[in-house]
Image 1 (tube, rainbow, N blue to C red):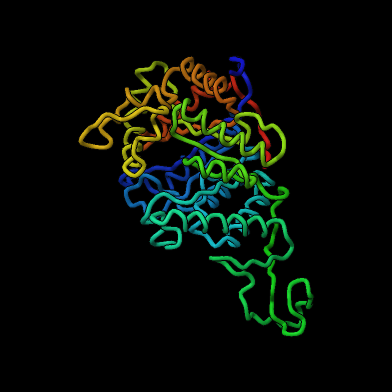
Image 2 (cartoon, rainbow, N blue to C red):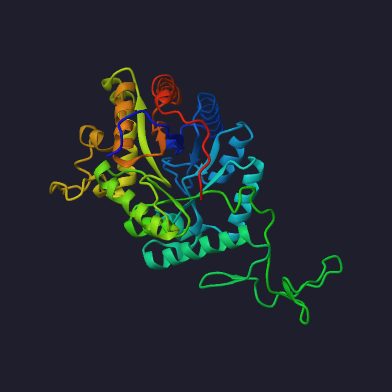
Length: 395
């Protein structure tokens, strides 16, 4: 167990942008996010994170490009780190993604955290990249792993050559013979003028590349990330379940690096948060919104991720019948008074040595003004217990 004292923790905002029913204009949504970003930077938060989702006509997730959102916020802030939770890189051309992250890193003066994901919704993969369809988990993972390998090559090598299952660079047979392009055996066959290697511009400002974060659920993904220079981000599980997952990451990372890695190092936790003057106010103002979103996401995920080790759901007609506020609240929600939230964050620190906490309050149908009241109360009465100032996250 860790000492139960106030310790510094990096606090970020998980900006999963929602607009159920598409009742707001997109301009209004952008202005609300800009207001949020400036507010949390002024209060001393460390980071803001955007998601990538597509084709969501229901409005539960309405940000198709987290990198562009980060670019907009980069222009309006100075210290806030800019993350994506996550870019679904299996939908991207890996070299185009590497270029865009590198550009964002320069635009933000080195404030980027690059988040990586494999995808969730079948209608996204089916229409963006059939190779990423999660019905074939093994193929999706091979695509993800090759994409990450290519990105790292592009960021760290002047010229790259790659021949894999999904990607080949440079494309065979491409002849390059321009008088203003000096010939060099570094990247071409001087006899045939065939390009053999290519380069991206620019390379990232942060070296060797921005901190990488993978959104993970399974133990195998946690271990793979630990062995491949990638931090991990977790969202739903209870503390007892998280403890095992934190330990898997710690052990694999320690073995990979050849040093003892502390529990919690390289791990971020997302928690749904609503700070109010009373427990009842938190439930009234934020409870329906988070339950609406959980019913949306758990239609695919189920409720298994909310259970303690060894716990089983009751046998009910519907798979989400147990999902109600009183059942979910003690498991993973930071809903309540400032005192309650401080206590729960301290518990996370004590049990997990938590170092990076991402919070979300803009739930579906919760007005921006209501969510901002929660955030401002958190700033005034919770943040000071844990505020760390801007952090630099190691790869």
